[in-house]
Length: 137
Length: 421
Image 1 (tube, one colour):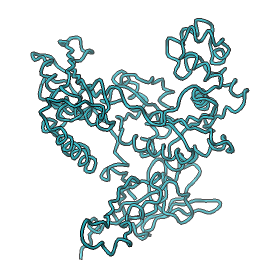
Image 2: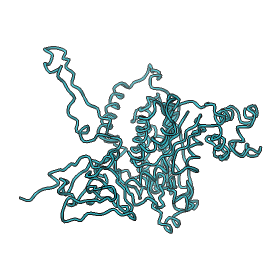
Image 3: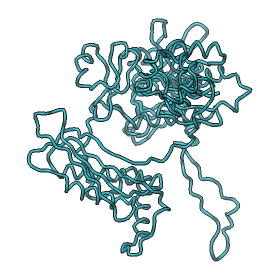
Image 4: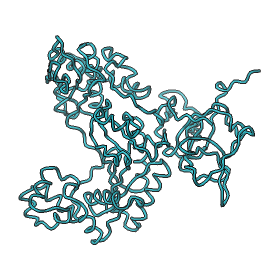
């Protein structure tokens, strides 16, 4: 993911006038750079479901997950609860910790000591593809 | 000072990362073609599953203890290994990749660092960034670092780091290590040492240098120096070019169909040719071999192998495939032989620019080379074997058995982790 080759267009032309843009050439926008801050610790996942719809995670979406980020209160996290993956808001205070959905039809999960709980990574970008989430007009 | 960083049960750790319900459960990974056990979780080790056991012999045990079995997913392990190594590289100026899951770090330039703290940081960073547990052994030589790593796994599992900083700590570790567990000792020398009453690594350090040289040659002396804290093993920052390249596999099934053999052999030959080009080598000889299943004595047995000399040193796919298929036609025996394995080897390698020109050469080799380079470029960009020789075909009818293969979670967008939320 981090070994991208970017081809530069050189301003040298064997004949004719040099391009006036030569001095202003910049690297073309690389979405990888924008979407992935830490390539070594970043993974992409597919998720489906409605529980995070109000957090702008469409029913079908790809999520960019960075494991290197320390999960804070309010982060959207990819968590593992009793061996199963889920994506929710992380809510925590000094004493307790919850996984909170962004949809009132779902209920929040309180993390108790007897649960096997782990934050796998923090969701750093959400990629929604309109063609996968058609709205019936 | 040197550090050896080793990923714990690496293949199992990779599988667990994407299937977290397997933590705490027995897991094994099988070799290519689902042959033998090549990685075990601690729980599987505790069940008495031994490294290298043929899978079919353990099936009962697997079933009884609900062992989760995986085919080896080298695409996944390779990517995660690459990430581990790159994270390690961010900590030290020099390192050597020792295997897919181990690396030596050169700490000689890190005089002002607290190395124990560095070891702990490395371990934490890889755990946090990748979720892969590693163990770090730090000591004055490579051999001792390897030993320190092993010792850490045995004695300080929770810390995961052992820093053999003082004479006392080194002695403690040497005393706890049997001679056969010394890195690079070899079976024969281990037996020789034991027969002479040297039981632990500590005993070996007390042997007179003369004795080591006489009985165990320079290899033994080097080992003795390493154990006594004198670095004697050279660093290999770049992997060495291979002397021979071999590609061989058992098929997922047995066959007497020569067309399947031809397909397999030409694919193996193409891989050899590509590997040659990647290290800028050419070969003088091409060897091809096939054999029947030796574990089924009730079937007719045959092993055929032939080595052909190339007209001229080459690394072109069409040439290597040509020789391999010519060889196959010679050794193939029809009439009821059922083959289960084929292989291609390229031998006597010479670097590309050392190749001599031939006055009577009729072929336009520069043109062929250009074509091959173009094909390689297309395949690098578009994916392996996008452009291939017709004889390689597309079906991979000889394909390996990999029934319990996990997904390519990190390299194929269609196979990424799926989560219901």
